[in-house]
Image (cartoon, rainbow, N blue to C red):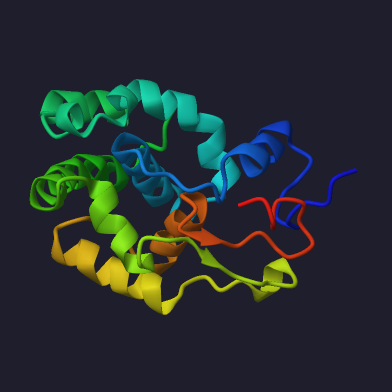
Length: 186
């Protein structure tokens, strides 16, 4: 049996997410936008809650295409707030639209969101050496800097803890514990 990070339960969805996605570097702008939005939706909730609804989120938010999302109007917002497949928190729903607008501005300024966001780790993943899951911090100086800059650019639901979870999910940091079978593979 493979040894995984301690946060992984025996839920097949969680196992698959851990084994095939979490901590793998992402450089695709639309995927980065999706993860930023999903991490914001997760605020105050467990990640498995969002993971179980990810396909619903993709359907509700046009596969997280920032160009489409940035043009959502009040009718669309009303519809999203009635969608039982997503978290129907008004602030979180509106933040996806706000973030799409800010995301497009960053793309315009930097060429790609990828170019912008990976600068916070000097364009290469940070390899950590955590012995156990309780040693992994909730935020770091890099996530604090990222949060501050994203907020300055108009993004919402991007506090330092959300930013660190985003960094972990998108492979900007490798936080697989040293006893996890994926520690040396990323």
